[in-house]
Image 1 (cartoon, rainbow, N blue to C red):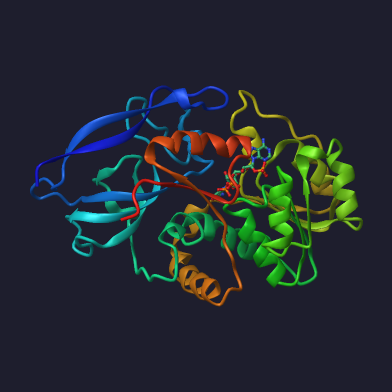
Image 2: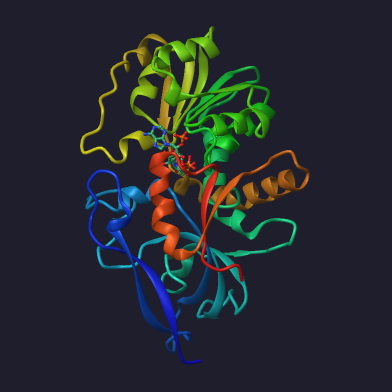
Length: 343
Ligand code: NAP
């Protein structure tokens, strides 16, 4: 096979503040669709790309982070679904479907191909789900709720960024566990989804609440047992004053802080002492070993309809920067996916 045109998304420069489309650019290069002799890598055609909030961290020049920064002038990398064109890995063959770390480009030569997981695809499950519910966001929700929150039947649960890739699942898990579940999200459309699609008991649009403390008291007159933290900042402060005795806070993320030059302070941490609250951060990467069990469980729940999933699909690799930036402006409704190609 000869050279093939390969469209790529490049990070132009490190980002300060909110990322913009002009921090990234589209570049066209040529790629030979054949692995170099003796390569142990995998050559793939990318199908679906995942837009994830942690990618913002990689757009800054930070040292010592749990994931390395991107390199300006190089292709952005992230999780995605792809089809194998040529493989130096014994367990992967041409036409196999995989998910794992790939490039934001049409074709990728993945030298370090150990994150690629083979997909046993069946037509009843959307392939794009391997960017979300069947990949790390799904595992995050599962581990975060069952392992970190220590839930008990009847607990009152509050979830921020509740309609997103992770939050929509946490809410469904908590409901099926027998908890009372309320979520916050940034639009009435999303709140409607929480209540009418994901089965939350209630939800509110935090952008329309000028007093978050009062809003939480309205939905949790007797306090919150579990807070699934995804936004940080003012929401965390308001939640801290509304936690119950022996409450648990699972710190999954703090997206409201990712674009700030300096993090906002948290003022009500003393509540942790007075209320004997356990607040624990976690990273999904530490729970990768649980993926096979998780996958088996979630596939059967998707098939029997006990769990549902909403995606926000952006068509075209060239629109990937817009989709990624949208995460920080509440634009995505559900898991943000970019379609590079459908087959
Ligand atoms: P997502 O919820 O699908 O998308 C991000 C959402 O965050 C936006 O749609 C927006 O929804 C909300 N948001 C953006 N800026 C905000 C702000 N300033 N204040 C409040 N809300 C804001 O993303 P996701 O993939 O499910 O990730 C959710 C959180 O989990 C993030 O903090 C992410 O970093 C974290 N995470 C952690 C792990 C881990 O291993 N610990 C793994 C995956 C994700 P609204 O409409 O609600 O504003």
